[in-house]
Length: 375
Image 1 (cartoon, one colour):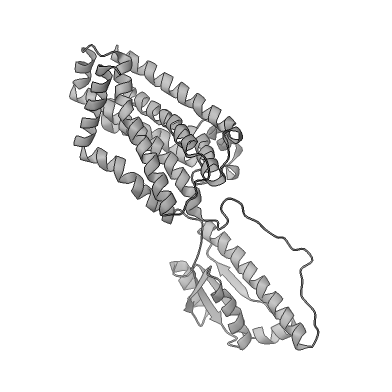
Image 2 (cartoon, rainbow, N blue to C red):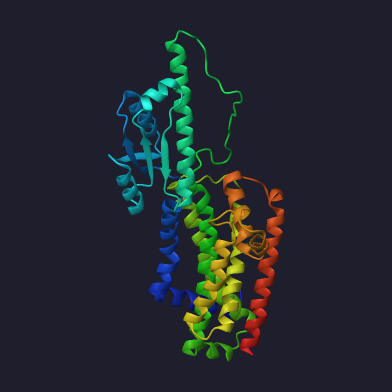
């Protein structure tokens, strides 16, 4: 191997290990992001604080409340005596939902015409929609149990059965664990962000300190300088991928159903897009702060328009078209399909081709721009 190239790579590694902030960003931040997003970025809504106004205070009303208690969606946190207290609790955010049982609930239930009010705080649509669905399912199940009990009490051996029964089967993530969906996205975000930020700041740091001119006047060829500067971050990005995969698998129980070699190869291809963005940003920035801001200008749209947090199907058509310009979009489809579904290359070949095309184009533009700055 070219000794000049080895010298550049060795110099870059020495610089990285001397910089404590860079080491923290490379080694600690990926794990921190993994745990934060793995535990906090979840759509699994549980233990919603519930306020209860039971004006009936009858065995029938207590049976209804037991149905809510049995489901882990709700937690009866407050028992109040007036609707004004419910309004105050929901306004303050102490309670996110409330059940109001009228005084004549038992009587109306015997007549087959009982009504219960269920109030939701809709300021958080995600929690509210989950709570609404859960409340409807609990009410329907409780109503069916009451009908069956009434039939058995009258001596009629009738079974209450719905006219249509839907048997559901969930593939790939049967328990609907949000971490299994988020962790592959974290891998893509880490590869993109860390590679772009570190590459951009590394080149700009050389320019700020005046050492880039010293490198230019040496016998080092331009391609050796570029490869030597990028190679350490390829190795570190590869290490971060293995690190996040290992922690996600052993700690969060995320399955790895696809070919591990294919996962790593395609991750390195996607890493080239982050390196290209970082290299290109270094050519238009004069300080490390400008380089980081430039990278973040590309990172934020990628996160929000790639399907990392929000489903692309729920976005307006204009944003969906813009999302096709985000390399992270294709990588998330690839990594989630490989990890969770265990598909082969033929099932994701369209996304792989698109991602490879972005990697080649972005890296080529960055290298040409970098050559011009060196000249």
